[in-house]
Length: 341
Image 1 (cartoon, rainbow, N blue to C red):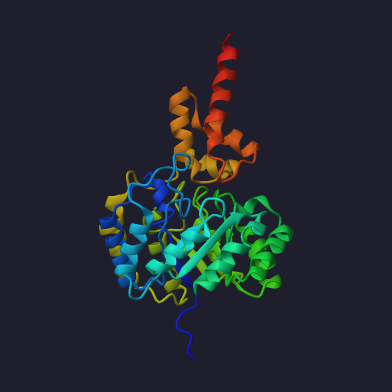
Image 2 (spheres, rainbow, N blue to C red; image 1 turned 135 degrees about the vertical axis):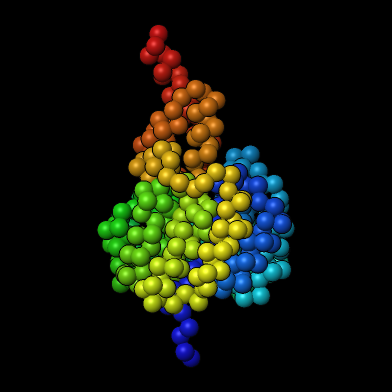
């Protein structure tokens, strides 16, 4: 069979981008974006709450629209693209997986902290039984050395994952660190390797290209950088660069440019750029979705959001510990008040 593409891109704006707009996606928005991505030839389109299936909550942020409605809407207009979902064990359940599969989702991305792959076997097995393409998604990969990453990736492989991802959730990895991690996985696992970057240090594109150089064939992007923090590798830019490099993606460059400008840009509450808050996320190595939570806590306690994020980094707080943001903010405010006295 003739190979029709070299790199498979997963568009994450309808999941990761949920963080950037406070989880306020509507069915109409998802229909428009998913239809355009499908028409442009994007092979995978991820649709979920920012924190995955069943993420809608007071802790993680309440969705405007039930995510199952959004998944169903995306499936209804995707006759070429496969709709993917994200699930974090402990937030989402096997029941959620079954419901998403019943609606037509074809890929399950099972996300764990980079050192906690052992919480995923049940969910990966269930996804495989449902006939879904299955991805092991190792979040906060900057927090583990290559040897630990290999160990965890092998676990994901043993559970039945088709692909394992190095996930730079904080946008903290430097190109040399990405190279080391992807190269190590390429040498030690027998499944596909992917990379998911965030742009908090303006390195998402460079890191994605390094990942491809080292053998990653699955790359994530978000149109118009619609993702947590400063967003992800910008998809329309990525496909344009890859086209110039003569690397096949099967995606129409002009259509990606048009949908980014005409359909996704109006959804953004503010332009996605590297602000001081997103920059400090990468500097501190803190989960990119913490930015909005930290800004709210900073406003409540009258302190600098950067101080909160730096302290969270020192504490090595990870995704799922959003409730600690307010606690940390309160402690910083208390310390500042005490110092003034």
